[in-house]
Length: 387
Ligand code: ADP
Image 1 (cartoon, rainbow, N blue to C red):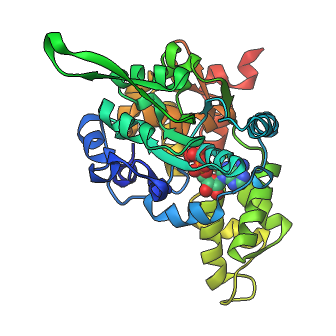
Image 2: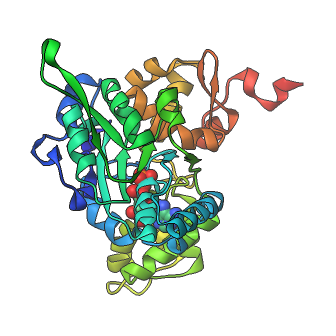
């Protein structure tokens, strides 16, 4: 993860409702920085990262949709959740456990909070890497109010040994605890209140089958289209009290790499720019298409929404590795990032835009990527050589 990511608390702004053992512990960053490969210069912010950066907690919180009707897009997911929520409410029971998968910044935490709000239930949040011992899990689960939503972010990073603790908790609301030692040891079952576990993951593939199977509902969130992102930008502008026209919101949406968190961040940066250099000079922000374009150009966010690092990945494959194929680990070292970060954070959008392809032998860049970088594609990739 990037240097900034290292400084982030594992739970971000989610600590507000938190109880339990997490507070005393140092953020996962400490451990991650020594164990997990190359780290970018701390403090160097990557504007297009879909992950939360520490200074944004307030922004995330103020713009986060509170109700299902405020959550833009992902219609299939919303429809299904609405039905399940209504059914659970009618029966007065907790909702089935839900797994939300998808790249960062697409609304997994927001959806989990919305589920709690819609159920009028308590929301308690933690993250996989913050749960280290069985006692951590026991203290969270045993103190939940009935029908709470227990949110575990990055659930794929839950220590393996702890996964088994979750199985009986998810299935039968019990937590087996060993009391005593040696021959006199016995297992007693701690009864747990009814609860809904909502797990979020950027890597559903890393979850073990037994854990995955214990979720009654699994949803995959997809990158958002420009129209939905435009709506999100206008909604956020309304909350922030910023005037924005259609072209302004379209420009920001088209450069937000399919990710609401990025859209909100760009909106805020463009607002800052508009306040000092907007069409009417210094004063309250009014964002039109030209102002948005100018501000984003200044921030080096290009027309496709790529920032310097995305372009570095493309250029590295194109120039250092002759267009590829290059293995993910080699590529990660070459651009000075962690393998997981390249795969989970940068790649989804580059793949979606048709700039990178995954092949069995590694990553390759496409003619569209060469064109975007203004580089000449190798002969075999040029259209004339296809005939
Ligand atoms: P994740 O947990 O997947 O990383 P979050 O739920 O933290 O993503 O979302 C990041 C920010 O993006 C939120 O603060 C929220 O303002 C915004 N956001 C995400 N999804 C939506 C959506 N569908 N509609 C409106 N805003 C959204």
